Image (cartoon, helix red, strand yellow):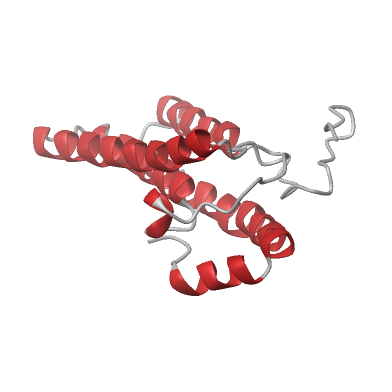
Length: 163
């Protein structure tokens, strides 16, 4: 069943997350950058060590996200949150976190904030985290529970939501 772009409703056999996580990440990134430009805090310049640490954090977040994403792709599992899941992925990055792609996006944004010494970009981690915690993850968990039942319940008991 296809999603109707006019109603913004998702098919019943999906988590029903119509506001896509990558779009919200991009909005947080652009919003933080815009706030940095429009309302610059006291001049902050990232020392080289902070910049290098921020880049390392951002790269680690991106790598963790792509590890989870790549496993989905390799197994042919839908990444798009308005499509049904064909199977439960419990290996790779998903052994460490039930949400490695979201952990990765949050870490990537935090790393960019550190590397640029941007209070605004770093601060955008909070609304992005709230979006994942209160909008995306409850829908996905309810869907996976309906779709995979005891298999998902066992996985939830064994693997933490974040890290």
